[in-house]
Image (cartoon, rainbow, N blue to C red; front, side, top):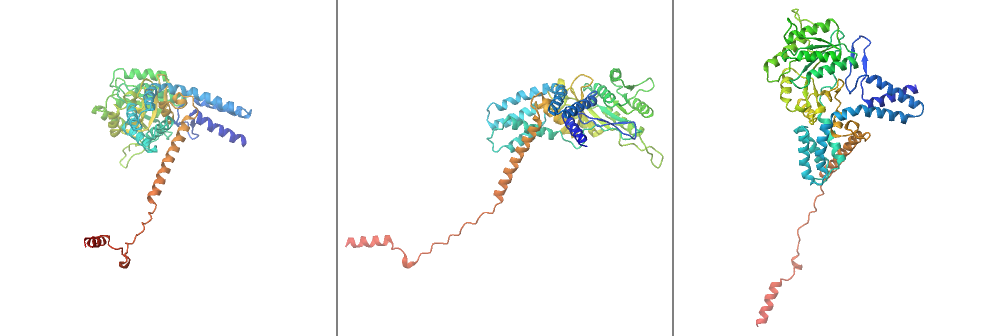
Length: 470
């Protein structure tokens, strides 16, 4: 029992340190349910178990410290690629941030801070939130915050800006008779096709999924051939247009048929890459969504007609180039209104100095970022994990290329302390304002007795003057 508790404790440590996800196979069916929460790679589960066994072995030999050091080394290696992926955004941001600590006036510092945050593409709302938080946490407008205080505030507010009501987890089919359908949108040049290929690879390798790709981008010349190449690299099957099946909706229906009849786990649907102001494309996407809902219908109405399955597609994901983040907002807003998006995939973070746009786009749309691309490799499509992303953007901890251990946790503790001090000052001020004011004593008017009245000095002087004349 004691050994089991130790094993569970070590597992918890490893999960926290390495942030990988397990693949869970439900006993009731052969379908694999994936919980994509943290970033994980090919054979990550096996590697994690190996690390856990090594840690348990070290503990049993009285060398727990060495085992933890090995796990930390393992984690650093895994964080290295992520840190490099955000290096351009981080360097651009931190270089400008240095100006704030050159001794400029505290009030001027606030204006400069807002300008730097806007230049980092974090968006107006997030920039204003950070500046207001800095102002509220200072004891006075003349106080100069330390680098640690400022970093803790920025980290906390950016993390809050990335919070949405919708889950960051990729949603998979819970029905063993239906495939998971991931409906993927994006304008030309955003990296949609490569993202589908990388995601297909991850699902097959890491999730043991059988994956089918629907090549429904029949508008762009070469799109089907490009997707075919990625499907071959990922070693997954693909359904494309034929001489008789040419339209996007027809190709999609054929892919749905194949996915259902041959019991594929997941169907990835590629769509035509055009801008949202193309009304024909928008209506095409709406039609494709209806095709999915009708083909995967599981009930009929009283007239015997199929009732659309409103629970599919399981995800409607928009692919956005990080360098075009703010510019892509208009398209995202239109498609979110007309089709209904469930999440975002940010690509090309490794080649962009505008990683902050992730925050602005997610906050403005109130949509979770679910996946991010940080490189050209097949395994460089990562699950979006806010803490790691923000730390990578700000140069904090291993994810930001820093050697400081647990720096993110320490900054969070510092922010909690600053907020507690602010609340304490506010409470003390409120107590003073609410305290009853003692009434001023009433001073009665001076009462002078006529008998004791002093003689009139002027009258006496006048009498003396009269006497002197005589």
